Length: 268
Length: 202
Image (cartoon, rainbow over all chains, first blue to last red; front, side, top):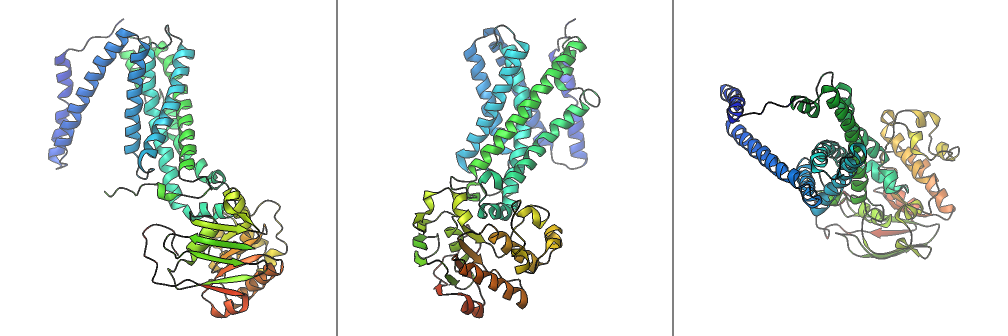
């Protein structure tokens, strides 16, 4: 069994549904018509481009091309991570921390899943590595941004409590222990929720995609289970690396709290 | 002996002074003159230029936490990170003499911090700063929220620290208290400090 190929007319029919959004926006004066149009056009162009790029890269099966695409994905995720943070580190520190975290967690989890769990030949086969990396990055992005949000805002809010501990002779990690726990817990919550409802309330996107593309649902379920575990590992690892790195960067070698290294919140 | 040489706190004049063991230095000056900033810099809670030696050892010769275990800054408004007072003391801390000296008892330790009065919290904060017997006490308005009786008890406790050869720097707006405790005074002038948006509030 194979998937039914979609024609441009099929896509046009689907796009017609956007008229519903436009009608709602006009009827209620939401003034979203412009944003909707831009977002839709962007989405179509991005996905079409990705389709062509992946088609090309899959055909090459070259480690260099795979690595290049993977790197671009990590950098794009890094920019997105930056934009999701209200209070972030100043300048290049934030970008460096975000990308290092995503590269570490995304890279390790993807390598583990692709090379060890699935084991295609060659192990860097882009058909396996890149989609897994994409899912890993998406989920890690969520948990890392939640972790950093909790930690950085908490550092600001609980500044006097942290400094009270530092003044009593605590090390920076002792002084941040409450916030570290809180940040890691917050970062793990979405994943716990996703795992709890997977297959019951929602059919995970990857599994749905595989089924639509003609896979056996049993096979699709196995892949989805594998991916869930990989995502769980990557999210936790990413959140841990992000909060440890962030504590390291908003304190200094003398174990002083350096909130001056956080950028001022952006004015809306 | 605590020796401060060319301490350069942003926004303050460069300061040099020394305090010998068993003596108390009063730090005076109007609000905003940088008294808190100076104490925080000596405790190495904020970056500052210059040298601070405790018994001949400069602060940079030891790790920050180690320095702050000996050179203790106690805020006028102590901050708390756990629900009850007891959780803020090291396990096995010797409290049986310290608490009564500040009219505190086990009940204060086990009640939620939020239910204590401002004065009780201030006394608990003072006990927390003293419990591990640091060599230098940097007390920022330690009795500002206390009634006359409690303030007198706190003063007795501070005097006892001096008898035990500890060094005390105290910020106080109570002239009589300074008269009773201090061996020397340091006056920080107002007006020469530009107002800064950043940095800790004085």
